[in-house]
Image (cartoon, rainbow, N blue to C red; front, side, top):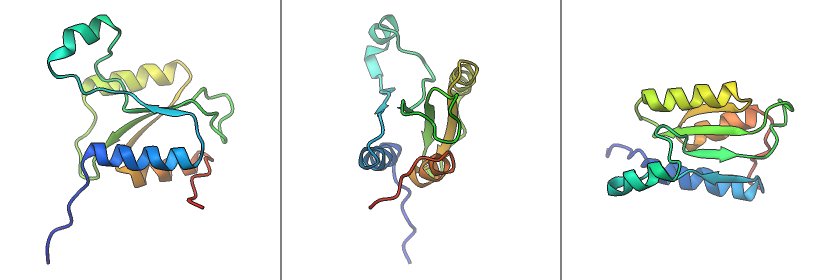
Length: 121
């Protein structure tokens, strides 16, 4: 029997984005793919460790929270880097909810637990 292939991170990101679009939430991907343009991006405000995704829609079960930053890893992915951990900690101190998710399904489950209605109708 062939081994199940774990989706790549960009595939997980696409799945999550599709679900958030269907739920009509205000959200966007934060492009962290930089390659040789890193110097220019740093001058433009690029933050090493910035999360992969942001939801700016109110958090239903935490009304004082401004939004959610999501660090999205593959299902069998590595732990967040030190830069990513620092970014998440700073976001949390500034009033945002933070999630580290291992695959789109994990992200969707965590967001559902926060009260977002992500059922695919």
